[in-house]
Image (tube, rainbow, N blue to C red; front, top):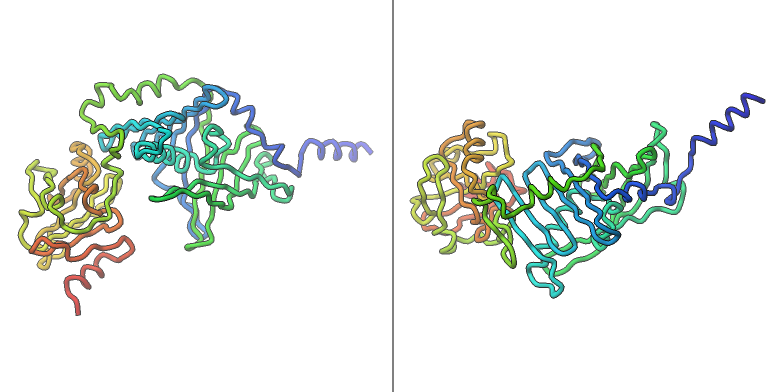
Length: 385
């Protein structure tokens, strides 16, 4: 009888069934300040690999309807959003920006929405319970059936099969899209600490987000320091605002050699000398150099496709931070065919097409989509059967 009583008491302390009402974040959200780190993982087939991007999130609950949320990712993007405005700082690219949330739907509001999207749908994806003041961007439908809730083997984590409804915006409209997600709730910390989405197509890929390093102390000094856009530390940064978007994030779809493109100054990373595409003789290949591509195989040598290509240019398009770019080149032992032209992507597509070939008459010979194999594409383009 004593053994039976003990077993019943133990069963009463260890719940096996949960529902939506059991998984509250009210205690956590009662704090004025909440901050944590988010690790992002890529799910491909049956593997889960960490991505290169992680986020530090700071939430300031000013009152029941007003939240400031800051996101700092390790690519160098720092964004602070409020319901009225957004501030942007990018240290690798030397950019700052300020956009207001205007009620009349002007272009400035579109750029404000872009900042909000980068914080909420990239920094803390699948965790809308932590930003109720921005509930038009995302919300989670918790399941009614207890069978959708499972206590994991650690005895403290509840796995939930739920649905996430997110706002997806395109050039001409926005729409709400439902996605199945899996959430993980820590019953000891009373927080959702992980979430993942695994698509059925293509290739069964998806993402997983995990929260760690949770703290509740004030981070006001951090926000004041980073987002003081009038600070002398930002004196050499390029400033955007109003209807002008941030140059390093802007992408044109044009692949033709317009006068703007042909006369755009390309600055040699080593010497500082300036050339233009119009001045070059022979066939030219342009490939964007990326601040975050830190492996030498990505960068092409000047003679990689000689003799068909006379000018092979690796072009940094995001930044005028010469010290950073030279540091990348030196660390990887790169050749001297490196140039930079911050802002050229506002006139030339080097995003959707990552290589452009220009003929000797300064006309676009071909533009390679990202999904094409470069050596094969070069061979087919320059040596057609």
